[in-house]
Amino acid sequence: MKHKQSKLIRTRADRTSEKEHSSPLFLTSSFTFDNAEDMRAAFADENDDNIYSRFSNPTVQEFVDRLCVLENAEAGFATASGMSAVFGSFMALLKKGDHLLSCNSIFGSTHTVVSKYLPKYGIDYSYVGASASAAEWEAAITPQTKMIYLETPTNPGVDVVDIAMLSTIAKKHKIILNVDNCFATPIGQTPIDLGADLVVHSATKWIDGQGRVLGGAIVGRKDLIHEIYLFCRSTGPSLSPFNAWILSKSLETLEVRMERHCSNALYLAEKLEGHQKINFVKYPFLPSHPHYAIAKKQMSNGGGIVCFELKDGIKAGQQFLNSLKMLSLTANLGDAKSIASHPASTTHAKLSEAERSAVSITPGLIRISVGLEHREDILADILQALEA
Ligand SMILES: *Cc1c(COP(=O)(O)O)cnc(C)c1O
Image 1 (cartoon, rainbow, N blue to C red):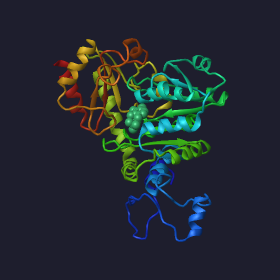
Image 2 (cartoon, rainbow, N blue to C red):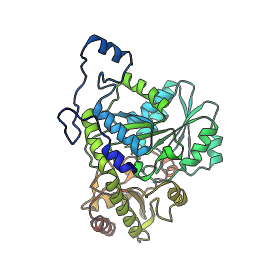
Image 3 (spheres, rainbow, N blue to C red):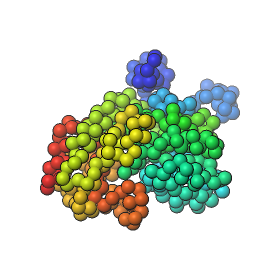
Image 4 (tube, protein in one colour):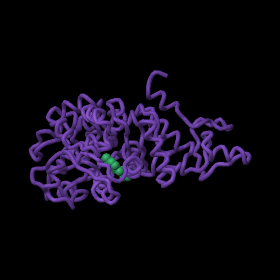
């Protein structure tokens, strides 16, 4: 098979004696052995036999194998949520005295892990802005820096960070480059092809795509994934086989879903740009985006998130949400249903205005996760809420 999409569809757990067409769900905590010798060999790591679903499970492995196809990754490990993937990738590879260099524009809970919990274990960190130059990134590296961490496009400000630029710096200093690819998905960009060592995912978002289950994954270099596997199999953030079964099916349709999410998003961004109630629209594939050139270089589509800034700030943001008739108000993104959120009054309300503006969150910023409804209905709901 020449194409990734075919390889993905045809990658599956071994067929059982029932010859089922759709992969079965191996909802089991443990696996049996025919005799004591086989059991001894499995525990001695002399073969790949499944022992216990905290370590491995065929349904979970199918999800991992499919994600590895999409990300062009050597190996992977699936976790119960995106946050356990992020946390596992830090804890397995960093130790006391190490330094993590991170982009400052990162998911809220990731920021909590980096700034509150890592220091508790003696792991130091510093932040660099999403628009920083190569020289600014390089100046922040210390002899203790073991990992560079970033998300692109960022949440919720959809800033775009140059992965290839960071990979050049990371390789020069022998640092691990770890990229959260949740927003773009492997359909929009493949960080490993741009030089990343690891990719983390919240599968809860676009990969599930229908707001049903939590899940996460870490894929990338085999030696690093092995360390992560050893850490996770002992500490227990493993993905449930039930959720893995759902997420593995979801991957089959990720490409076609993302095509529609992204074309709806681009349509919306173009139609809203220049609206009299809006200061600016931010979407990676709009030429007015500050990082348009980087986005065009590393992404094959602009993603499913559109942001815009209302002229009248924080009050206008809440009023806008109250006026929506179809779009959902919910703490998720990457769903078939379009979702609106107002970060300044919700997810990022605890930050000061200065802290918010440092990560591109202005008072009137609205984030739209563009769904699969007809694009005219999505646009119409937003336009009537802008008028209200
Ligand atoms: C949601 C999200 C996470 C965390 O994932 P969960 O599955 O909610 O634990 C991490 N990174 C990004 C960019 C996210 O949007």
